[in-house]
Image (cartoon, helix red, strand yellow):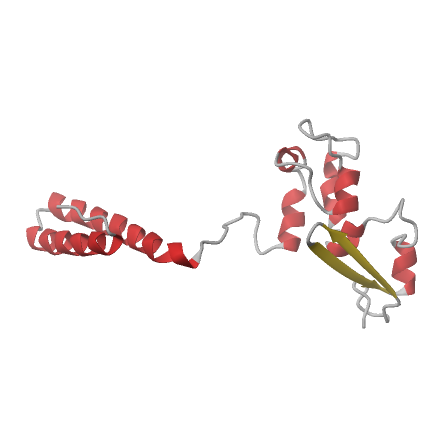
Length: 166
């Protein structure tokens, strides 16, 4: 197994961090474990290894003395745990955080997920809004044949939603 940090040497030090239901494993070679102070719990920053070499340092542009006004969390706390203390921390430590998030995720904006059961109503609702816009434009353009066809399609979509309208 190769070292997670240098990706060259054989990993001889295996670390596991358990926080709540989260379990993260890191495998390091002897040299990287010494460099990252893996045997010294006071100086070891698990987040440094998890986020990639140097990624956690990008957040330090704000200054190591900075503290979140809401929860009192500091950047050294973040480096130790790899997590912020509260939502306000994202605003407090925003400088340099974008690069860090890009290295960890696909983007810097959370889109979330939608339960499968809610997907069809959402799709139908989106389609309904689009049809309504097209209907409004057809009425403005005095294209009444298209408007009538769109009206019928809107009724059909509303019927699928269970929102029976006249």
